[in-house]
Image (tube, rainbow over all chains, first blue to last red; front, side):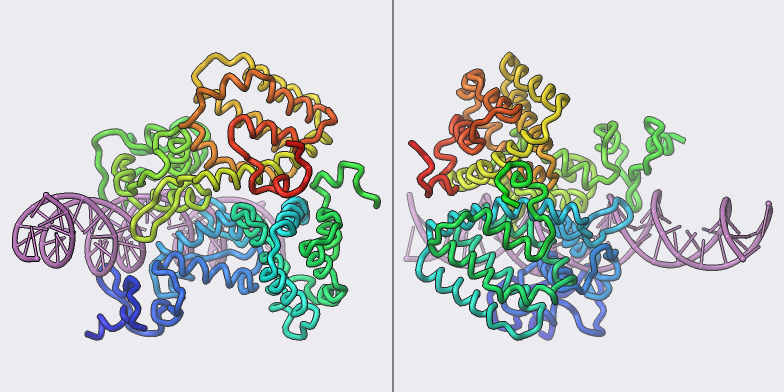
Length: 257
Length: 257
DNA sequence: TGGCCATAAACCGTATACAGTTTGGCGATA
DNA sequence: TATCGCCAAACTGTATACGGTTTATGGCCA
């Protein structure tokens, strides 16, 4: 009876999370399957661990370049290494981890060049997203975006959460573009980028946000007639040096600089 | 001695592939570790299985929508399910497989909409690649590209290999762009696309290739002054219907059509 | 005292074993 | 004859066990 009750916590009809292993299980100290399993928790440990680790990496709990010990994580979570391995494997494909054969997983450390390469792509893709979003804009979406911009302009909380707001605003534009594929690529591109930004030079930047630069993007998607590429360039230049380095903007004569 | 010899095939200093499991191993019939392990084979089974399965999916051995039975594959390869699971997990992240929780992996079946969404992105990204490649072109790369175009124009072999040539030509341009990130995204985007094209409507298309359309792209990256976006649009229109559907080309007045 | 080699511990890659869920098929009933 | 419910086989998710490699530590020698 006590065993059966565990799987039915909350009375949901979802598949029971695995409570017992092949033979034995430690009955001491908390278990990930009891603690963290809230509402939208996926039913497999692999997915749960993956999301948990991703959040921890993005929040700065694990630093870029740091080694990820799968045995240690498995012990900490009181589960076997298999789900942890698979979660790490997924995170590797997402670009957050880098695998060194037979040596383990390491949190991806982006070089300056790689940051510029990613941003050069963002330039092109976000500009495209802005063009699409502008053409498909609805009052509801515009209201959401405006709300986010005003939240940022009036922000007075911890800086980490401001970064989340920033991401939320951009992600909303990506979604409004109406091309799920474009949205996926942009998310995948910027995830590792934000893992770095969560740690470094966030303090200097908050001031610049107030300079209505997100509002410039908002005006564009609201129907403004500026050039999305130049707007994105200006936007990225606030946080990074020469973000257009590996884009065609650097090689064509389009820049007045 | 016979055991030791297996790991040292070719006399390379690479780590020995695993020959024995925890306790026992079947000594009958061929083993993947003996058969397919050629030169550049990665040292882990997971990577090897991943590449093997990817090649089989891309070659049409597994059809879109088909279920992938991990136990069956493990038995066929005479290995345990663990490396197979991890390989499948990686392929899922690459977009070639879709996981249905507790029901298994299925070869991703792209809908018409998804194909259009991917192509709309290709339009933007390949155009950017062409602009970059044009600016960074070297005689050596140009020679390679020209050679590929001529191979395609004079092609008289099986159609499947012609598709590979097509991919090779585009991939060469992506690489010539000099932004590894852009290259990675384009590879990832088109991989699942080519898995479909390997099966359908390849016969009609071979004729159109001879119409020098790849040469049009070649001329562009060689220094021609046309618009890369329009060139890519024309190129994609040969194989797909309305590839610009989810791109900004569809919503701006740029199209004369 | 510093560098090199050997030994040992930790850890990754893989194999086998088991629990719960899904699924296909069979029989009973309307 | 068609539909619903039950049962068994197969399969996925996870746990534990083991072999080999990498790495860190300590002793030895220059």
